[in-house]
Length: 233
Image (cartoon, rainbow, N blue to C red; front, side, top):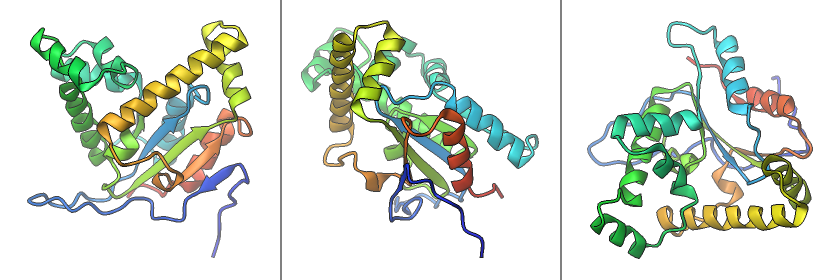
């Protein structure tokens, strides 16, 4: 029986790809392939979702429902168009740092509150995952789709010094300023998970694999994910 080589820079969790959800009154979703990608600040790979979608589409033959789509900025645009919520409000969901009191006061003032935005995002994420052949980036997509079969959940990480270097280059900052900015991004993302997924820490067991982008370039990350992906039926 053939086995796939797993590079040492990939950490895999000793767990099934996904866990069955028990939702009263709802039929179990059919197993369709999809990917979620969570990324540490500074460990991102900007072109990865698009390149992965292209490779998976080529592998699965494309056409007749075989086309894979990536949903990063595109997810924000879709939620904005479908729900008539400004894109910048959706974009700030993971970085706003608002408390429940801010949401209450914002609702009184007529602003779209974070809970409403989050529900729109979560509905869209699950619908795309249930449709299949979707690559979902960020916005807690790994949490939102855990009960759906067919998912491969990936986390990209890197050592702090590499992350700082990437943030400095991306935002044209000095290393000290980049470190400060990166830590702020980490705090904001941690606050997002704490608000909407309380009691569910972001641990390795949530993922099918963790990939070190300091040791693997973008092409190697794509190849590693492809090696773990089952062929679509």
